[in-house]
Length: 194
Image: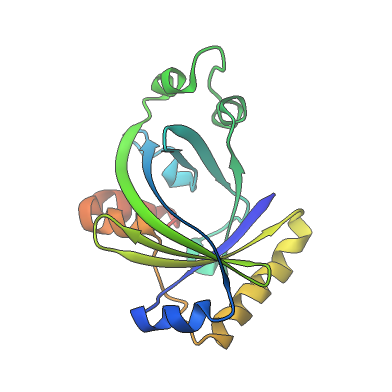
């Protein structure tokens, strides 16, 4: 599955309008720990390695080019240690928590999120409140094939227009870097990832 997603800037009053007619799927709290090397080998290539509640996940970009030219973000997610090790080119002989040390991958951000996920038609609507005082809103569609991405992007943008959403918004990790690691964010801007 390919995740096609877009963050939108929202205000508190937008939520009532957005969830009208939607079904609450869940409320949960989770902690993500993001990893990279000192030279930003992962994030500099738009790869996002994290643990969520202790389990490794890797998001690999499916859309190429400068982020400012992107309509949405598209990632393939890998959730097994073997898949992640293969994608990162590291040994699968040892536990992933040990193997990532070969590449000098260490934590650079720990973020606890309170998430409410709603279903509206086939869209997932995620309202995230982070422990560092940032609120994010994301619209997501899942597609099976690369050729379905363009139609999903159009639908997400139409959803945003219909609901009068501001398309300019940072995701939680970029906002975290802006506040706490501006040198990392500056590097990602030069690389076209931020």
